[in-house]
Amino acid sequence: MSSRRLITSSERNKLDPFVVATGDASPRDQRDLMERPFFSLAKAKRTRPILYEAGDVRVEVYAVPEHGMATIWDADVLIWAASQIVEAENLGLKTSRFLRFTPYQLLIAVGRQTGARDYKLLKGALARLQATVIRTTIRHCEHWRRHQFSWINEWEECARRDGRVEGMEFVLPDWFYRGVIDRSLVLTIDPAYFSLTGGIERWLYRVARKHAGRQPKGWLFEVAHLHEKSGSLAKLADFAFDLRRIAARQPLPGYHLSIERKARRELLRILPSQSSTAPVDGAVNHLGTSGVRAIGTSGVPVSGFRECKPQLTLWPETAIARPNLESNLESNCCSGPVRPADNADACAEPPTKHPNQQSLPLLPHKAGDKR
Image (tube, rainbow, N blue to C red; front, side, top):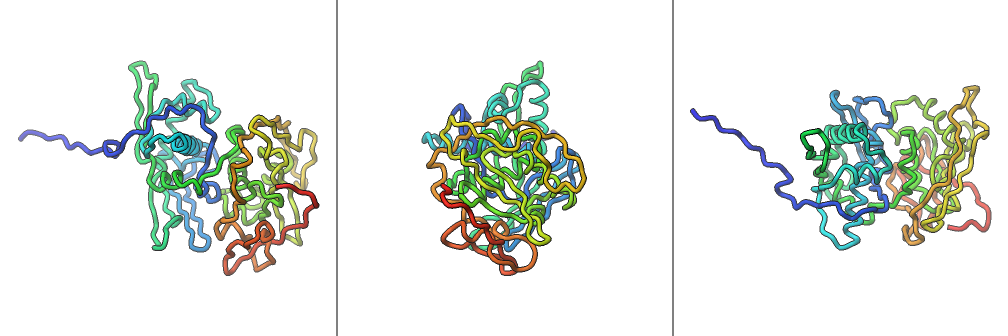
């Protein structure tokens, strides 16, 4: 009996390739990924799943032991893909979920080196993105449903005999692609984001960009609530300590962080820096250079203070047509018992509140603040 080889049809055969050739593109991030715990914040391999639920929104993230969960550094691949898709759409080019590109394009765009080690790390990131499984009810429209997918459906590299990679291609999930081509679900981010080295710093910048935006009063979060939103495996006390260190160093481009306390609750206020609305070539002047004193470290020595050098911003005045006030239930409230509205003064229409949770009141601000 003659043997017959079973050939599995690739999804790429059904899609027109989007050949990335637009050059530089302003970094853009997908809103849903900016405020929910979709990624591991640690560089060490994580296999423990993320289970997050608030209101009617549920996020589940699972990893396989071989590769571990996709990290927030791996998410740079998705940010780059979203940036290229939006840029191509702006130029009137046809896009699809099937991207064809050179690794050099991606690595340069996200601030990485282009050595052999960096190509190897990129392949590791693609493997984790494909192996990570997400289940979520976000964007289930009028009918409740749970969507399951991986960040990358499939990927392939084209290499020479000497091992040098000349090209790559991958297929994005439909859930992510639809969230990118819908302009209301995409935000421009500062390219200095890619220089942030800490997992919590990167996650915190995305939260700040999504919620505080350029609102003059910024946004106020309870630290315990942020801990829940992060999906971090760190204990609440350790997570709070990390936030104090970050607030002391002020590393986030375009935002100023401050720790506040009300009764026994610890809060983090996120305010947009005045320079965050500067022209494209304007530098952001950060606060908190070396020598700044620690905030509430309870005797634990703080290390790693360093000077924050000026960084660029790509936010034109028309980048945000309105404040980011359509945040979901779990983003407008803090954990704990019912309290007065926290971020209610940030907009004319108060945000939707969870029936069992409300937000904290904004502190009065000085007259003359500009949006």
